Amino acid sequence: MIELYDIYKIYKMGENEVYALNGVSLKIKPHEFVAIVGPSGSGKSTLMNIIGCLDTPTSGTYILDGHEVSKLNDNQLAEIRNSKIGFVFQNFNLIPQLTALENVELPLIYKGTPASTRHKLAKEALARVGLEHRMHHRPRELSGGQQQRVAIARALVTNPAIILADEPTGNLDSKSGAEIMQIFKELHAQGSTIVLITHDNNLAAQARRIVRIQDGQIIEDKEVS
Ligand code: ADP
Ligand code: MG
Image (tube, rainbow, N blue to C red):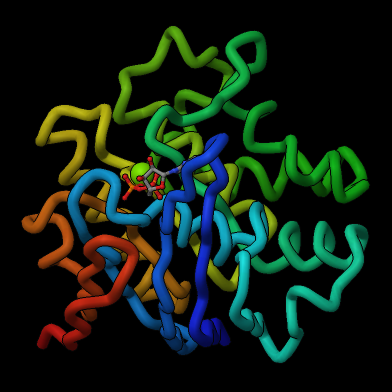
């Protein structure tokens, strides 16, 4: 499903070039639960942005579900991103003025889903993260862990095949972080493909496959039983 071949990403900073990714090749199959782990600055977010079609590599080939991403136009790219991938970020990225339910409905509004279906799907997504009873609360009325659960519900609501999460527990205390990991495990058990990006070895150890990245290169790739 995700196929990366010899991916380089070079950022130009005036005179300098930063090699954020140095020839990354990686395949992720449907229903895997993969942790991409490495220290700060190792290229994890750059890799996530490329996998999520939010950024393009300097060179190399990315094939997502059989589509060569560099050959897609902007509309096709947006379509594939919106239909196949759900994003979860460290800082939740919720809209403060909207309730939990309204935040979760947003991706469906972009898709043009009718209101009644939207409410139903958003409530179902909130129920999957155990937050149905908080659907009319605004983000500031929720704990950090609850806000991240809303963000996960928003990622789930379009029923994407892949959940891409970049340091999803980075702003949470360890108990809330453990709850978020539990939700990812459940989603994986229900068939989602999970790509978890983290600098935390203990979190990574809870995935089924660990891909270790350092200085923009994969230095280890192992299955966990
Ligand atoms: P990580 O998520 O593992 O901390 P990043 O992918 O954010 O790593 O960054 C990898 C390297 O690329 C770092 O050296 C970082 O400073 C650099 N980098 C990331 N984004 C940019 C950018 N937009 N412009 C220039 N350099 C960048
Ligand atoms: Mg990062």
